[in-house]
Image (cartoon, rainbow, N blue to C red; front, side, top):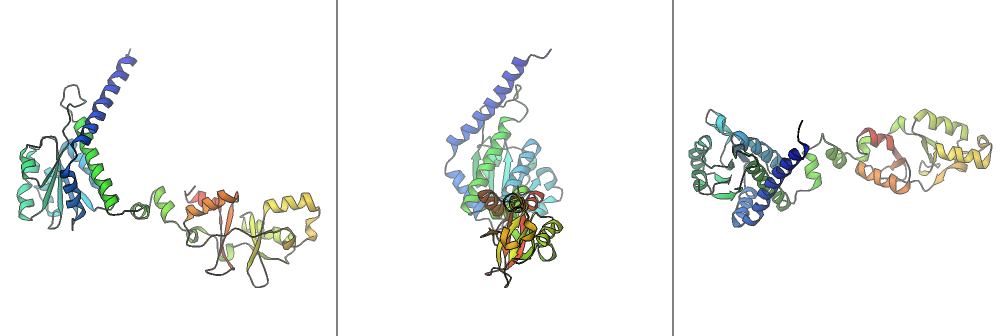
Length: 325
């Protein structure tokens, strides 16, 4: 039988060791970190993040985080670099190398090309006195007291520390570059955040033949047919000039039956809700959700630019289908 208490204790020990490894970086941050940020900020090309083994996997994530937060970056496998992939490196780039020992032979072989091209080299390492560190323009000390691995062999706390240092660089850079949510969304158009920050009302609204509309003089029977045929549970009501003056929903019809009895003798103007809620076509779809929640409604009409004529209608179901809600 597995000893649950022993398992949980060991897991807590691992997390404690890794947490202390990250916390130790805070005390070590100094002008070297500021210089690293400055080099990356002023980079005219791209950031080439390179490493090997477990550090290489961390490099993948650092490069991805930099790229998605406004600093173009790519991962260069240190082993493949000396077999042709060095072509990825160009003048104007900055090299960010991750090596806990600072003595990784494959990374050291990259030093001649970085010098020849005049590239700046930033190193994240657990050994600030290593060969790699001595060749660097900036050294970020990511040393940890111990690995979480009981044998001290498998990179655990050291890779976590390196990853955290990379995250710190990326986050500080995005703030220095005044990187906004909209910029992030442009790099993530397929994700939920991208949809929320990119999709506008006009991208989702029903228009033309799909737009339910009646005049204020339209009999309720025809109004009901318009609501039913357009399948949005609502219709706009316009005046003689085509301006939107009201809306009628399924709920308005039900309430009319309860309070007025035979509603089929009435016209649209007799049941419509006045002062309909509208939203601009160029508003973000996520803003439409906020307006609907604020007024406890499920549809919004969109007016023509600087006018009162309806150009479209947006229903809560459209926002649900788009993944905005």
